[in-house]
Length: 161
Image 1 (tube, helix red, strand yellow):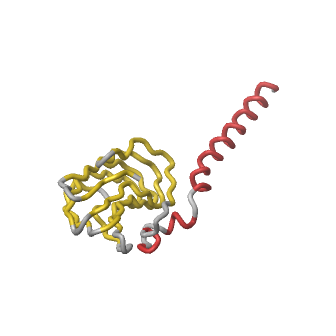
Image 2 (cartoon, rainbow, N blue to C red):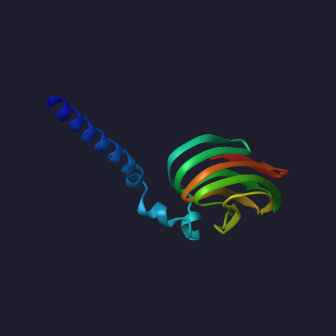
Image 3 (cartoon, one colour):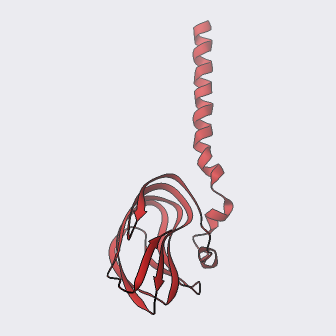
């Protein structure tokens, strides 16, 4: 009888721990992060606000190679300083299995333009206007993997955030 009680107590403790851990991601995602995806004025803000349940990989130089689960909010990946209107090529392979994802360009005057989104393999030539521009990842409960390479830029300095 004692063994059965001990096993039952261990099972109950284990269930409480598992349930508590699963709820942690929902406790760390703010209501504001859940509303960012469809709000261009919020996306254009200089500060970032994001939560990933899992994130591996990195943004280095002009390349991003990242896998993630449950991404909410917005994260600046690159700053592009341009002297006049310049073209930058964005080669992307996105495999988004859940939620919504997009990569956006934010100009110095806070205009938000979608570069690429959801699951696709694409190459886009974007015009980067004069000044300080940003490229941000924006997610709404997004899960997937991304490989992005910026190329063919001459009079644009590209730095990671």
